Image (cartoon, rainbow, N blue to C red; front, side):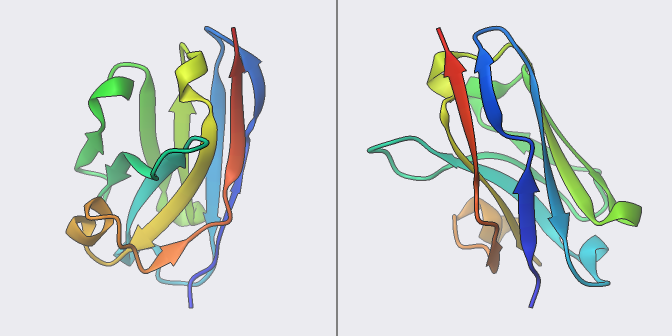
Length: 123
């Protein structure tokens, strides 16, 4: 089993930045595609970004393009989400996820989920 632990959430003012981290257990991190999801109160969980196992291919939902950057450091078993120019509508619990296939991630059915970290953007 792979365990994922998110960190870096918090409260920021609109226009500010946060960097989320997701630390993975195990020795086979580099085999997994990784992703970030978010869930706002009363809404379904939404895919935000994915990155392939090598880091060569990335995906972003349209609402965060140009503002968020997903990256990974396989030597540290860690995936990151750099969030700039934050907006109040970004407020949500952010979840890290992992799967052997990026297509399964993008369908919302990853093999592994983290516990989530709260991001709150004030106006």
